[in-house]
Length: 318
Image 1 (cartoon, rainbow, N blue to C red):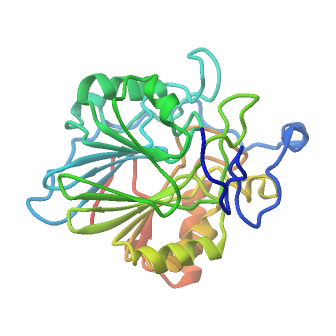
Image 2 (tube, rainbow, N blue to C red; image 1 turned 180 degrees about the horizontal axis):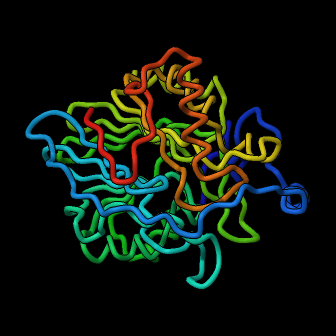
Image 3 (tube, rainbow, N blue to C red; image 1 turned 60 degrees about the horizontal axis):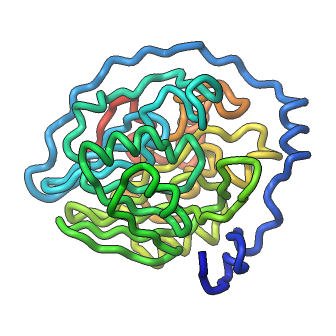
């Protein structure tokens, strides 16, 4: 990949401007050796939800499928964020984090997907088996940060757009996606750390502005700039899980109180909490993010409908 150096690319790898180096293998070992993870249930069954109708004209219906997978529907388009329908978030089918909660929407019930938004290359966000299914069935446009094209081409996706932070791609029917910064990192194996970029998306669709944060730690400067440059989103989809222990996770995953701050930083009219309850990736309990969100929302003086965590398969309208 030949790219010009920038404030977040040194000619070889991407980085978070102004942040210290990412946690290394010694930090990972320290976490695993000292971890006191709260036990999760082995399986949480959820009823498969029927999809509500798409808007007849303006508006967006957002349905939380599970983890960071959200189905967005307008009157003329269907968009999926970080789709994962596989049983494991892993390079193999026999090991790695297993789903505790199955997808709350049946794959075959999802209408033809026009666009996929991919935030970064981690296995719980960039699931190649799911992308292969979507490529065969729908031939969607995939929009991803810089460096993802070779990985995505291997799934059979033919229409791929790579973006740098703050770049925008517009396409019919009336969709416009801007890649925005996030505080995170990339790697799919022991080597190649940060050879691909990461980010969130500000999506204009159905006459609405929707913010998908992807995976990110909290940095007030980042989120205030997103709100200033892109405008206040009608709907923000913010991660609220995978945040303990803080000494290890805070540089990559925000916790619910920080998510409430992001809601205000970007000026969101309404937010929903995602990225919880599906895969046990860190030390907090399965229901802890929802309880912590309710407490943080109360301290901030927000109504429940301003920032809530919908149930699996739950939908909101923006």
